[in-house]
Picture 1: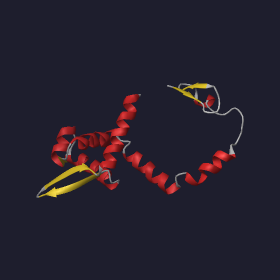
Picture 2: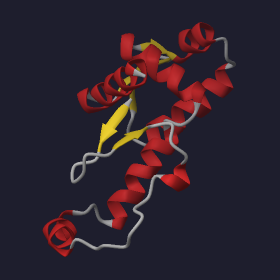
Picture 3: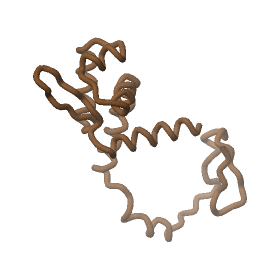
Picture 4: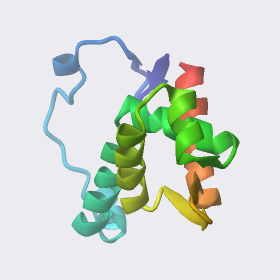
Length: 134
């Protein structure tokens, strides 16, 4: 992927070494800073978003989210589908539930899990699209 710098006709290859991908001259554009300073995400919101992405940063939880993006599952079926123990599955579901990524409902002695809401489904779908674009 080639990205063009907005203020110059210099093209940067995404494979350029990280230490080379910095400004060569210190120049603060105060008009840009002033324009966006009050729009920047707060530290509390940034921490919350980081926690959300950290929760999604586990392959087992991603596989659970993938299954739940397709259908509602009881814990037993989800564990069998993913070839996990019920204990491991329950633990990961608790982590996802604590981050409001999944919800559950009881039906007698059975507990069924699903994606919490359309925002979570969309986040998951867009994440997959992003990695598939590669």
